[in-house]
Length: 146
Image 1: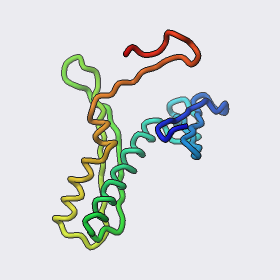
Image 2: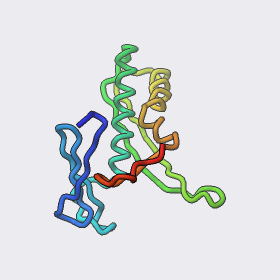
Image 3: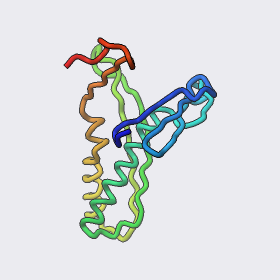
């Protein structure tokens, strides 16, 4: 398994409960009871928010260390909403991040770290459009078109 490979398999202990394997890590995912699940783990959108929050905190930490800023702790709180878009374009996904920075930082340093948070790779991925292909395992002819 490569570092970019994730395997998700139904766990068998709930309608939507999944076991996720990422390298040596095993995680669980499910839907909340209000969505017909058994709440055995975070929902897929909660995982997206967790990835965005972790990437944000790591990006801020890396920059602060590189520039010897006295950052002692970063906290990122996230929310996800779907909003109607203009015309017939469906909905728009909207993520909010509230970033708390601890340490003896100046206002200028805090604002710079906020700017840097916008450059986290997951933020940039979410802002771009993506291509998602699907194929059936072991079934020739289901590979995505080149």
